[in-house]
Image (tube, rainbow, N blue to C red; front, top):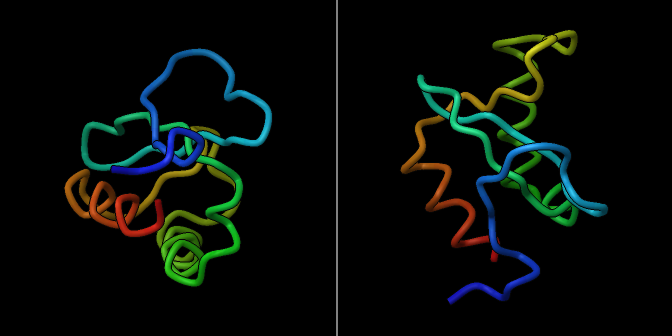
Length: 79
């Protein structure tokens, strides 16, 4: 079971301090993730793929090029 501070949360509004928002899957499900994930090489690879697919100037926010199940697996590995 992941540590509470590393749990990914679905939330509305602004991300709390030390977290940021990503959107995943065809339905663009919103997740709030800890900024500590930015240090992990697997998450960095996912962000690089997002930049290649969507560019850096996406007004919708950070869109990750994976489905929700894959993202949940990655998060459980990182947590």
